[in-house]
Structure formats: structure tokens, C-alpha cells
Image (cartoon, rainbow, N blue to C red; front, side, top):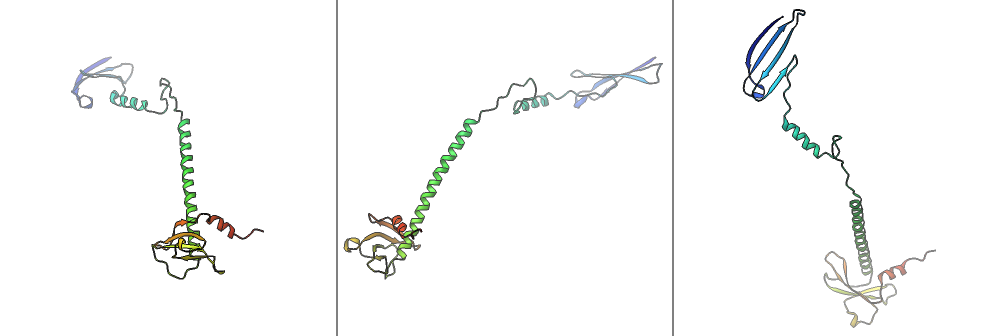
Length: 204
């Protein structure tokens, strides 16, 4: 058995200060193979190699980062992790549904009121345009609707105020720039809804 030893300075790992590598090669008389033992000595790090590749130590900063990530996982990452109790969202969901129901009911009420307003506006305009009048109305001027005395006309539109004319008064209206009649006043005792209901044909 023979042994050879020599020292060779090489650069340290990761650009550190040089280290000295000691090689000891022992020749076994019983085998043609040589067994090598390598040791690396450095002031700050130690590496041992016995016929296998050297592995650099893991970066502690990387391990610390993984640990911080694990802390924010929504589920346990190991058996030693603390128990994670899910939040109870029952109250949150219940409040959300209740708020949506209230808002929807309010909006539907507003839509219903707007619908009735538009329908009434249409019916009033239809009633006035179908009434009897022998002049062209002026935009912004107020006119008065009466029950007509003519057998072929049910209503008549006039510029005479109800105080000056002894006829069944219906209401006061003004003509808008867009051609729509705006309601200014409705006589007590007259209901547009009741009038329209009376005009419907009898079922049967």
C-alpha cells in the first residue's frame, strides 16, 4: 500500500478567499482502484468529500423567505402548523342579501311610480289633443279643459278661466316646447283613472 499527499491552493466557493485542498491517495495492493480522500479547509466554511460531489450549504435567506410564505398560506403546511379556523361568513352573507333586497324593493317602487306617471302623462295628452279647440295653442300659455256641450265632442279646450265660464271644469294645462301638455291643476272630483275605467268596453 502506498500513499501520496500533496496540497493545491484553489479558489474558495462563491468567490471567497482561496482555500487549500489536501489530496491523500492510497493505493490498495488488493485492488487496482485507488481510493481518494479530499478535505478542504477554510477559516469560515468546511467541506468534506469522500468520493462524492460537494454540496454548498443552503442560503439561510431563502429558507427564511419560504418560512415567511408559509405563514400566509390559507392551510397548514405541516403537522406542527397551528390550527386554522375558517371565518364564519354567515352574518356577512345575511347582511348582503338583506341590503340587496331592500335596494331592489326601493328601485322597483321608484320604477312603478315612474311608470304610473308616464302613463298618466300619456292619457292626459291624448285627452287634450282629442278635445275640441279652434285655435293653435301657444307654447307656455295656460289653457283650460271643460266638459263639452257638443254631442260630438266630450271635452273642449279654452283660454277662458273657470271663474269666468259656467261649465264643468276638468283642469288647467300648459303646452311644452316638446309638444307635451303639462298638468298644472286638476278639478276636485275628477279622476283620470276612473274616467278611463268608465270608457272601457263592458266585458261579456
